[in-house]
Length: 433
Image (cartoon, rainbow, N blue to C red; front, side):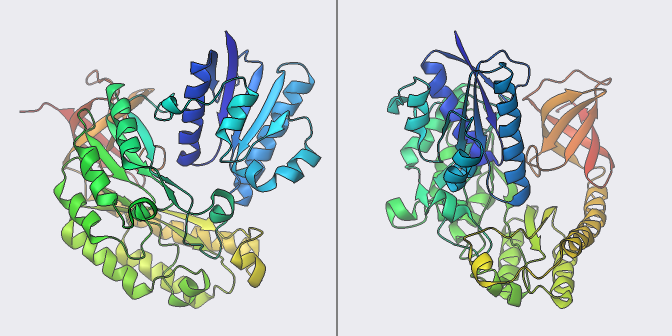
């Protein structure tokens, strides 16, 4: 058989794109490998990320490594797709001509044709999973309409485009039939789902329909923009037992001055009111957020306000990024990147030191509790599991001694938490009564 190696970089939305492409290639007769450096595949496809500086560097380094392999005869053909080539196609063709062809984020038919695999519409809901078989990402829309000051996603991916609900439900049913038990619902902004197709936001309806699919036991929501957060989504999260009490909601900052500079379209008061509303209706909800520090004009007063926000809200999960100027964005055009890189990193470290203490205190409060967990893998002397409060790959894990009992990957168990660290829990499985 023809063999192909698909390498995926960047976010989970890229993962879904690659999985759809791989299904098309498999149907065309390819033996598909993914993210492998130990394959004899003579054709390589790299799905790139072009969001921030570090991601662009990783993408370019990966392309150059594949070019080197091509030059010594280990591979014959090299194709580059995704965000980086969507944004910088002309520059890449000039600087790295050894790549056979470059394709953007929307030309899936083009890359399929270049590989001799005619794009077949009847396969649009098929995936070749690269995640463990018990969980998968479900991308419900493409692009974004918010146009935050620092963000290049609208320049790369375009405006918000929802996937029709019937298509998503069919895709989810196919995933469930293959053994997927947990769905991560993703988009650049999940709360905006449906407004372009149906004239109103329909995320709550989509979530209720997903809950009706046999085999799916956990559904969790990622990347929810806080502005005008739909109340019906809060209601469905509170009432549907299959929906994890977990929300990934990137606030980015809390100072009104910085929110205005970032073009975030909400205020501090609105953010705090939303958090209060979520915790009132869903008392045990785990909130995950990301913050952005070092944005142009960010002052020490802004930083202290951000620290107080983190201290007050006590997020369960939190990530911090240093501002990276992205050409074409509002901040690159209109603002001066006036915070030195060393200071940006110090600000990242300040927030993360604070969050480390909060995370440890939150975890210690869970010791003695019994949680339903799903087992992801075995690593050495421990099974690696998660509760509904943690998403795979980005959040903490529950480590269960493998010596006590044999567990099965992708299965649910009740576990009592026995110990805690800042970013990990330890537990033991208990029999169900």
